[in-house]
Length: 180
Image 1: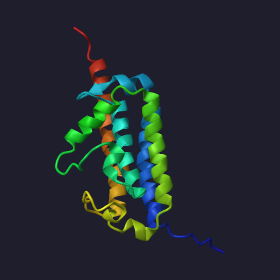
Image 2: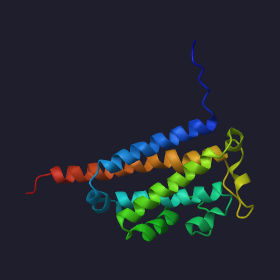
Image 3: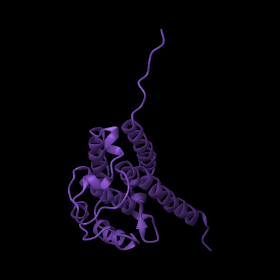
Image 4: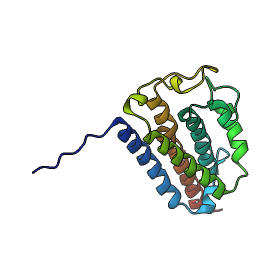
């Protein structure tokens, strides 16, 4: 007799997308010596700086999922509307001198909190406007809760994973060039 499989819920699919992207990033971290996570830089950023950046934006999403004001959660006064450069520079300054173990703890701990919160959501919750989870002031960005979660987790992880691989590749290329 064939075994019936329950179809995956939208929450399951979202968690899967988040876990795949984060798993790829965790494999990259595990395969990179810790000193390279801290010392290699491209455009001023180390791999550790990217990890802190991701951990900080995860706090933004945690606040949304907790139905708490998102801006104080990351220590900013206004949502970036056009360019994230100013806010990201602020996050960079906050994290640049933190030890790697602190950054990794926040990086992993914040994501664990998000996963725990997403598991409590229903499929219907994912299709609600993200603004339903936020106070009216300041006005929340547009989009569904599902889109907010994907952007801050899986898509953000993939974007920064590419930049982190580029930092490592840039260093390897520089190391391979013989000195004159």
